[in-house]
Image 1 (tube, helix red, strand yellow):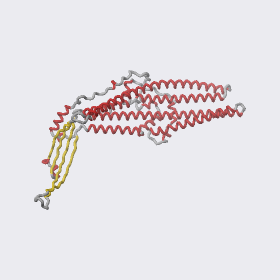
Image 2 (tube, one colour):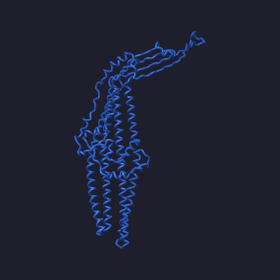
Image 3 (cartoon, rainbow, N blue to C red):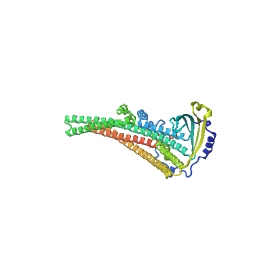
Image 4 (cartoon, rainbow, N blue to C red):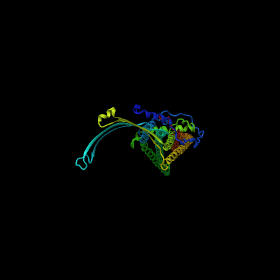
Length: 483
């Protein structure tokens, strides 16, 4: 901050008279309103269930230490998230620059010069001698320049920079939310793949046992060759299914490595068995859906779009103010003399005071066009905000509908599995008493394994849908403004 004592009183008086005159220029840009472009519904078609967000992050609702560790690793090591954080830093520095433009600009200068002058023709015209003189000058000055924000141009620039900073911060939080969802999807995918490997291994064991049983019966003269062929084909199919399940498990690992910022192959330390147990367990209560109008404060991507709209509106105000005169005050104080010691001698003090009024007169329509462009960009940001809001509403509706449908699907498959388990147990009891064949038991076990596989896929879809619901609702995003 510049010490007021170095400014002449006339400069301070001029600034004091000019500051109250700061006002919006005539014909100022009217602020944009989302209400004119979008009417939010009063409620969702599906209300969802009552529940609450976990304080430490939405994924903690799943209560999986393995998932927690993967998400934390992703938040700490993701290059994409680090890039988004740098965007926030850049926006913060631009805000500092915009704020500094409204303050007096102070510069210090030190000028040292030595000159030689020749007087040709003196003292005698045409003589051979040239009269020469040498001179030195020294100057030390402190210069102050201050553009008075008469039409709010500088304050609008700063407001736009602040809105850009808020947008970058919200986009960083949206990137965090997206990253956690991607990590969770892949982690749950690993859990499903591991559980599928376990089921495929059980299916292979059952098929090989059925083949061995068919071969024993044939050796005892109680079976036919086609029974062995069918059992062998079943065993080969089970081997192929197990190999495919293992390939699916391995194919998910590189993508997870990239998300958490690890080198390929590092995901081998993940406890896929724990993730398999997670995906086969029950989901916690779904988060509360709230009201559609509350979504604007729950989604970081919508908060970012709104901040971009505020920045575009500030840009339109700046473009409007550019069409009006700029008033700047300048002052300079210092010392000037021919010797270095003069620079600290008060008798050699000099000063100047000035005012500059720069008014645009003719720019070939460039300033008007710039204002029209800024207003069009503001309107574009408004429509982008409206489009993003509609898309967010649709995402919540779809997630709520999918949640209900997938819950029903899981319940139906669980009921089917219970019936098949009862059938398998009944056949096993009969087989023990000798009233049922071993082949019937093997077939029942194969059907049970197939039903478990179907239920596993449905549970995986239910968990993925729950992630989509968390993401659509904002994942517990805190929209508190930047301090």
